[in-house]
Image 1 (cartoon, one colour):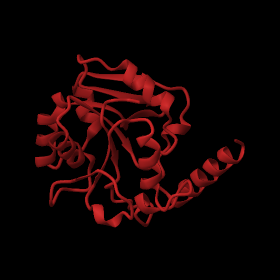
Image 2 (tube, rainbow, N blue to C red):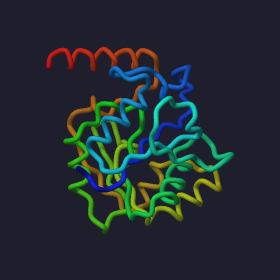
Image 3 (cartoon, rainbow, N blue to C red):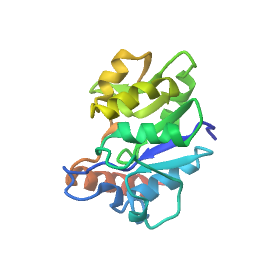
Image 4 (cartoon, helix red, strand yellow):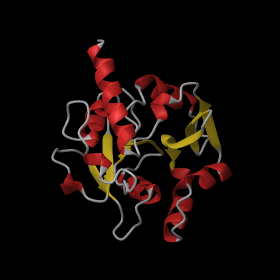
Amino acid sequence: MFDLPCILFAGGKSSRMGQDKSLLPFGGYSSLTQFQYVRLSKLFTHVSISTKEADKFDFTANFILDPKDADFAPTAGFVAAFEAIQTERIFVLSVDTPFVEKEIIKRLIDADTPHYDAVISKTSSGTHPMAGIYHRSLLSELKRMLSEEDHRLGKLLSSAKTHYVEFSDEDPFLNLNLPNEYEEAVSRYNNKNNLK
């Protein structure tokens, strides 16, 4: 199992989905969040869920709550996670990327060294800031961004010591932002598991 803490980000606005996507059923579980939490708990010794409110979920887990009055933005979750967990680095994954598998995570972890501030997934479509490793060295800058309501992770990573790990397959990194993307993901998951 991977020994660095995994933070599952499930506190977004879901404005394009039209409903809270973290609560949509997936993979035989009552919510996408529970599916991801159970799945990731088999890979990591410690998994926490970053969210604005824990009581919307109907299962028991380690929750890290965003600072009160913070925007719907990952920067709030990063600051809260580093303050709650006293480790030098965390692995982060957005709740709406259910196909980022163990092999991808292992490649990212294997590529990491203490010299970096972050190790981030990259495909031909661009970088994927919510699938990678962040080091505590970024905390002061994340706090500044949060206080100034500047939530551009791409900008933060471009000015930090970031190592990008290239992946040829785009599919695992597709976000479920729209209803049709969610439906396609459910179908893809079901088809994949029916073949086993």
